[in-house]
Length: 573
Image (cartoon, rainbow, N blue to C red; front, side, top):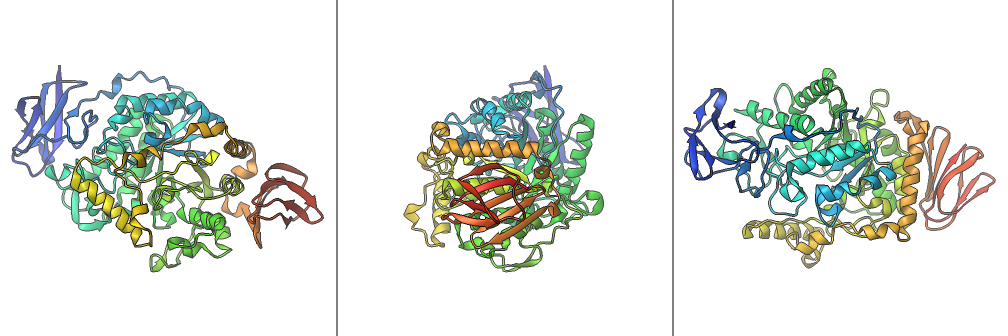
C-alpha cells in the first residue's frame, strides 16, 4: 500500500525519507515542500534526513512511540469507530471546567485510567474535562509544557488512539473535553524544528528564547503548522475546546494576528461540524480585546483565564502578601475582581513596574468569557514546594462558594474539591545530564532569590517529586474530605438549577464587605462569608426567606445572620 509522505524544509538542498535501513529521495515541491510516495500505512515507522542529517522525527508527527528522539509512526485517525454521532457539543462559556494532569490524576497516569473516574466527575457536576498538554515531551513524567511533537500524543499516556477513546467515553457520559496546547514555545529536548526551516525568529524574544516565527520570512507555513494542529484536534479527535497557553508570548506584528486567524478558522470548522468549538486563552495582558470578536478588532477567543480574580481570592483567604500578591492586599480588591474582572485595568502594577491592562465594559463583556478559580496547575505547581493553599476546610468551602456563585466560568483544579492533601510539584524526566542539572539548579536558584533554602526545593528530576504529586483517591471518603466534597457537589448542583447564579452579567453581582466578612448578592440569593475564625454577626439587606445551604453553623438574628468562624452560607431573600 502506498502512502504519501510530505515535509516542509524550504532551505534544504536534499531531503530523504528514512524507512528502516532504506533512504528514499524526496521530490521538491512548491513553497518549500517535499514529498514522495512509498510503501507504508498505519503503523509504519519513518523519519526524515535533511541535507544528509541523521534521521529526525516529522514536525507533524502524529505518533512518537519511542519518544521524542525516535522515529515517527503513521497514524490513521479514521480507523477509530466513534460512537458520539449524537454529541451536540457544549459551549465552554459558563460550563464547569475541571483541570487535570493525566500523569498525576491516577497512579497509572494514563488516559485509560483517567476514564475510570468519569462517573465521579459527572456526579461532581463537571461539564468540561480540561486536560493539561498531551503533546509528546521528553521522558515519562512531566507537566507537558516542554512538548516538542505537537501533533503526537504522549506515548506513556496511551498514544493517539487512547485520546480518541477517552474523548468518545467523555461524550458518552455528557462531558466535553478541552485540551491544553502550547504554541508559544517548544521544549529544549527533542526539538528538531530548526533543522527543517524558520520555525523561530530572532525578531522577537520570549522567556524561553527566540519566538515562534509568526511574522518573519517563512511565517506563512509556521502559522499553518499551528492552525492545522488546532483544527486536527477538533476534527480527528473530536475535542470541544482548546486552552491556549500564554498567548501573550505569541508575538505577532502581522496585519492579522495568529489568534484572530485561528479564531476565524475554528469558527468555520464549527459551522461545518455543527457543534460549538471553543478557544480558551491564558493571557497576562489583562485586555478584553482577547475575547472580543475579530470583526470588532478583537482576537476572537471564546474565553480567557482571569489570574487577577485568583490572586484577589487567594489573598483574601490566605493573607499572603509576597510577590505579585502585594497588589491584591487591599480589602476592596476582591470586590473589584468579582464585578470588573481585572484589578489591573490600566492601573499601576507594582510587580510589572508599569500601568497595565484595559478595563472590562459590563455593557459589552459577559462574565462567562472569563474563567475563575481558587487554584490551577500554575498557581499550585509554580510555588516553591508545590503546596496547595494551607486553609481550613471552612476556608476551602468559602473559596468554592465564591467561585461557583460568581458570574464567571468556574474551573476546579483536580483534587481541590475534597481538599486533597497531596501537593502538585514541578517535575521533569530529562535523560540528558546537563539539561537535568540545568533544570534542577535553575529551579533552586529561582526560589533562593525569594529567600528559600535551596535544599528545601524539591528536585524536579527526583521520581519522588512526581510520585508525591499523584492524587490519593482514598481520601475522598474520609473526613474532612468527604464533607468538603459534598459541599462542592451541592454548590455545583445549585449553580446548575438556579437562574440567578447562571446570570453572567457583571452588573448582576453586588458585594458588601465589612470587618472580616462579606456578602455577595446574586439576584434573590445572598452568599454570606465569615472570613474570621470567630463566630460573627453579619448584616443582611432583608430577612432571609430560608437557608439554601451552609458550611458551618448559622443562626438568624435581628439584622442578619450569626455565622460560625470560616463559615459560608447561601440564603434566599
